[in-house]
Image (cartoon, rainbow, N blue to C red; front, side):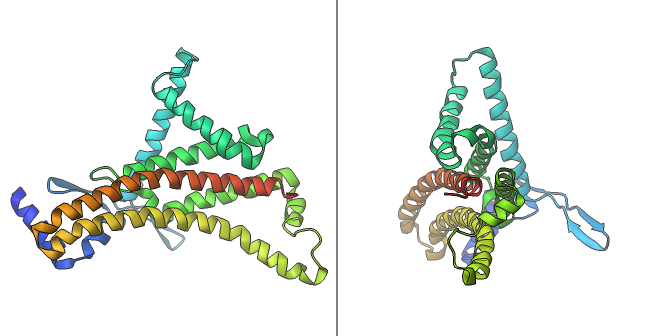
Length: 281
């Protein structure tokens, strides 16, 4: 393959389509691109179940989703092995202990209560590390941000929703939990309205989790690619230093956003669980 020709064709494509190449970088696809070296076409899998076509194709975001899960698993495995050798944390174990302690003391305990902290810490800790890993994978060269896919953020929000409802019903009972959705002291004529409002509130919470993570992780990549695209749109080398410096600044900001978004998703999930458990507050 003529590498020079590939680079020239790529630049021409970017210049001719202005913003189209940005969308191509963000959206999911069945191809792993390693331009200008090579690309890998991922397998397409379709199943027909009772006349319904199920698309189970492996896509770019699915690959990085699996990679993120594998990295989290290996990190936890290595940390566990380190603690088996010595109760004094060193290296990776020390870093993981700091993060887990922060999640326990600053996120989970204040929102769900001390008596429920150890029950929900594994779930909330896993959510935090998984989202954080997927966010950072998207910042690597040739990487892709699985959390910029609304299907991924929707699945994470759905899991958080199910855990929240389960926690509330286990603590208060099904009837007690549903009854607790209505604030005490509400006039009788407002009960039907309040019930509908509270039911809608149950679904707007996970919806907010889904949209917030998806929008923030997508927006950063759009800004970075748009700044780099100025070089090809204006077709002048003089804009390059400004464009690259601003893109670098946004890239560093994206590293902070990746951490903040993992924190916010975990914190809000923990808060919703605490609200479901302690309905009296």
